[in-house]
Image 1: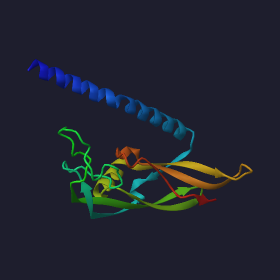
Image 2: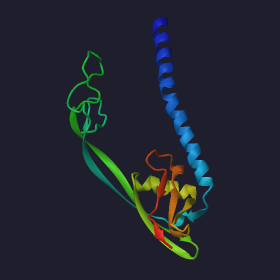
Image 3: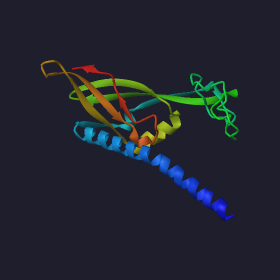
Image 4: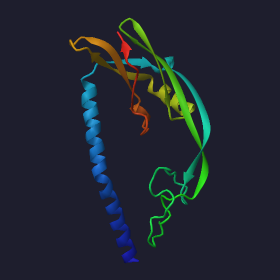
Length: 181
């Protein structure tokens, strides 16, 4: 029994240690992004003005024996990893499975300097969750990036929409199109 507890403790320590460098790298990247964003001007967009249109669809994807989604372009897609491990079928093709996917399209107007910029994009999240999070947030921050000509005069503008409040890995800073000024 003591040996089992010892091995569990070692396993937990190794698992935490293996994830530690990636967490510090992510924190460093986040600090760099925050430092950059502090150099930009920003405006806040009232989330009540954002229109959300959502849909769901079914996607048939390959999975392994543990129902983990697989990339068909992986070199191990059809062959096992070998050995006598209990996990020899992990990351190898087992069957096709249907997954329900969600996506929402947002439509918003960005008012800046007596002009309105129309923008829409699709986010990989269901519309109910997106609407609820926007409602709770009240304001969507848009950072302003200028694009310059060769003579250092601005000729285009781009906005970075800050969706980091949603706590979704796929949805962070969403750049808009470049707009002529």
